[in-house]
Length: 172
Image (tube, rainbow, N blue to C red; front, side, top):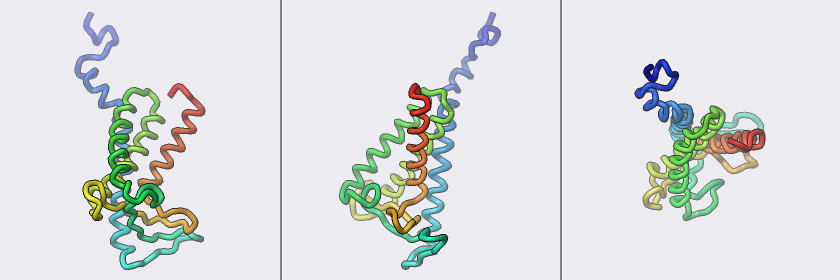
C-alpha cells in the first residue's frame, strides 16, 4: 500500500503544506501593503501644497509627514520602531503557519501588511534620519485624533480582531 492509499500526503503535497499554511497571511499582507502604498501615492499627488479634501463632518484628507513613531510621538525613535516592526512582521508570517485558524492567519496578515507598509515608507521616503529614518505618509484626518493611513488602520483592526479572537478562544 503506497502513501496515497493510506491517506497520508504524498511528498510534493507535504512540501507545499508550509506554503499553503502562510498563503492567507501573505495574501492579506500583500493586499494591505499595495492598498496602503497606492493611497499614499494618491495623497502625495492630490494633497500637496497644503490642499485638504473635506469629506463628512470632521473627516478630511490632509497630508502629513510623520518622522516620529506611532501617533507622531517618539521623535528620534522612528528608525528603531521601524526595525522592530520589520522583525515582528517577519515573525508574524512564520508564526501564522503554526496555526490552523484562518481567522488568526488573516489577522496576522493585517498586522504584518500594515507594519511593512509603514516600514517601506521609512526605508524609501527619505528624511534625514539615515536608514529607516524616512517619514511615513499620513493623510486620514478625523480632526480629533492623530492623522493616520491605511497601514495604521490595518494594524489597529488586526490587533482588535486578535484580541476578540483570543478572548473567544484562548487556545489560539
